[in-house]
Amino acid sequence: MQTSNNTNNSYLSSQTPPSGGWGAGSLISSVVPLPIENVDTDQIIPARFLKATDKKGFGDNLFADWRFNKDGSPKTEFVLNDPNYTGEILVAGKNFGSGSSREHAAWAIAGYGFKVVVSSFFADIFRNNALNNGVLPVVVSPEFLAEIFESVNKDSKTTLKVDLKSQTIINNATGKSESIEINSYKKDCLLNGFDDIDYLLSKKELIEEWEKKASTAH
Image (cartoon, rainbow, N blue to C red; front, side, top):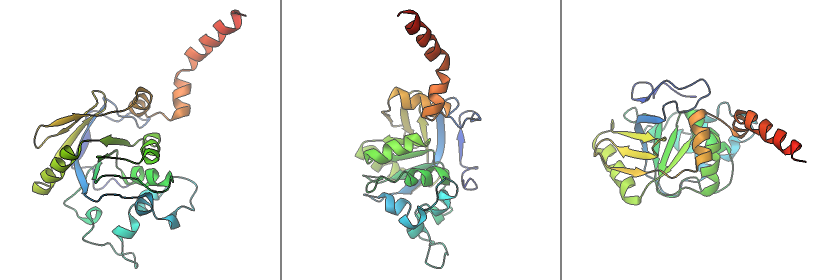
């Protein structure tokens, strides 16, 4: 996970618990703007990097074809190579994560160090993959998205506050906010750093109690 670009310009509202959850439930961070529409999963992580079977190292190849020349040198014009833009929030154009269903795209986003992706529309499969890998996809209105890009263009250190507990996103440059839609199960998983198995284990006592009641009822 690449963290060198994130430590000075973003922070969690409280210490992140060892599980990797959201702690107190909010994140304030400067953003990385990617005002490109229809970013598909092959652009997020090109197919040649899909041979690996675990999540390690995928962040190194996030947006590889946009980020690096063929000789491996960085393309200075691409936003991830611009030191003016750092943070744990990626702000992208409409229809982010379209194309194939590869979960590796979410691995790459998370592996680079992004906790949140903001767009006016996400492909459904990518959205679910992101949630399953600890990344919060935040859907905002086209108007609010345009306002964020405008704020960041004026000041690269512009920050957003994403409050998962209250389900709001705030542009700190303008004070404007919008609500965040997320189902209660995925919200609970993100807040606690749970995957599906962790969630079931957290309900072990309730499950065992239900099983006892069910067995004595027969």
